[in-house]
Amino acid sequence: MNLIPWRNKRAPEQSELVPVARFREGMDRLFDDFFRDGLSGIDRLLAPVMGKGPAVDVSEDDKHITVQAELPGVEPGDIDLRLNGDLITISGEKKEEHEEKRGGYHHVERRFGSFQRTVRLPGEVDPDKVEAEYRNGVLTVKMERAPGSVRKRIPVTRAGN
Image (cartoon, rainbow, N blue to C red; front, side, top):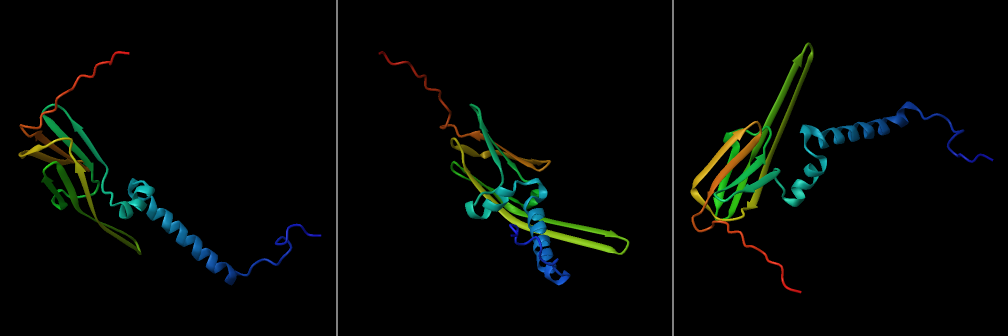
């Protein structure tokens, strides 16, 4: 009795392997696209569903609120920055083209995509005192707090038993 039913069958013909080869090439392409540009594949997958844009860090001190956003490959002119009360919106479009020619080989890749991220700031800021700088793929926005929104530390005391 043969316990492994597929072992003693004939070898598949070349024409039967073509769909499998196409499937494998498609899966290889899918994984290459999924992890391209150093972005996390799960972030790339969830971005359209969750409306998530670029990674953002928010820090603050007594006088300023600073927002940093990772925008690799984006030109400063393609970034739209808007401030509305205690909300800051960073949006734009990434346009990338890569062309390579060698001998009889010519390869061109184009990628386009838009992004948007709105973040609630930890306080009101003065819209006239905002500075934005883009360097090495990172947008840094430094905002001065509005006069009435100064942080105040509230001391917490231990209650009696």
